[in-house]
Length: 250
Image (cartoon, rainbow, N blue to C red; front, side, top):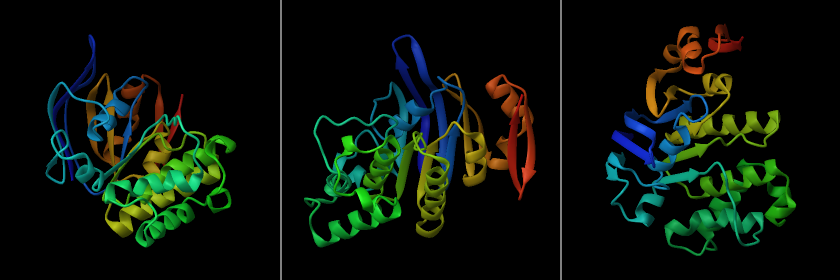
């Protein structure tokens, strides 16, 4: 369980996250909302990538602000929206970084098993020995996701993980996210711009606007024409295919 209680994050005079209190249960939760809604800032605060100005955040009862970094990293992995490295790494070496919170060098038999499994799950075995700067944007994105999975945590935060991915790999990644939640009981929180992807793969949706949570609940309760039209200030219609809502804009 991930819980936030009255969390506030300011950037100068701008309130990026405004008094947000949510309880995120195991499964897949998607965070949606227009640009500037505070989605990525909230995710970064949960992952302790940014500090907060007020409120509390816990992951399975551990205070995110006071828990030792290694202990927190054994429970929570996060993939940022923008990933930049100052050093030249191979795909395999990058994925091995995910094992550092567990106290190893990334080279123990257990570490190697997790690295190999993550590389296989993300279908990047053919480029495991290539350098990141030699890859396409989509291949790099999958390599960073593999690093997060190699961390082997119960909680996974993904900030717009579908960037640079073609439809085939978008579907493969979201199916993998769904499988991790179902088979391993993981709590996965993912920031998404595509509402239809969120509706297809998530259990719950957090809808944000102007730093605040305006809706939080099961997909069917949040993805309605009335809610989405108000959230995005754009006319929305909602149909249904195979029991899941499909959003038509305009």
